[in-house]
Amino acid sequence: MAKRYKDTDAWSKDPILNEESLDLLQKVMGMAGELKKEAPYEKIVTTEFAKKAIENFEK
Image 1 (cartoon, rainbow, N blue to C red):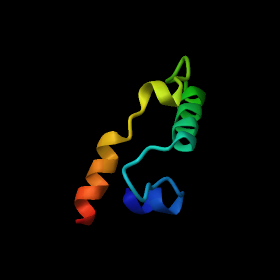
Image 2: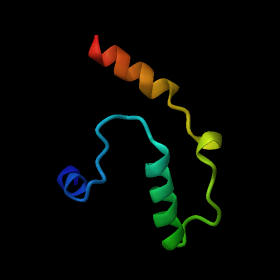
Image 3: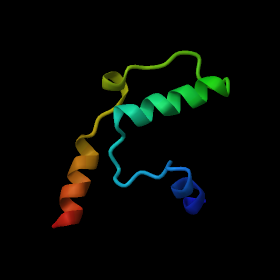
Image 4: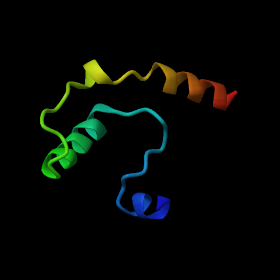
């Protein structure tokens, strides 16, 4: 599974969900009929915990 994600460039190099990735995810979910309305990035994503995890991992 991970290889397939990496081959299609869907594998994230870190745990931070960026706005471009969320936009793509919402578009795919919308095309699949699984999402009725897109949500704004700043309303549903927080990177605080991911940034702390990266800091702790690098120590």
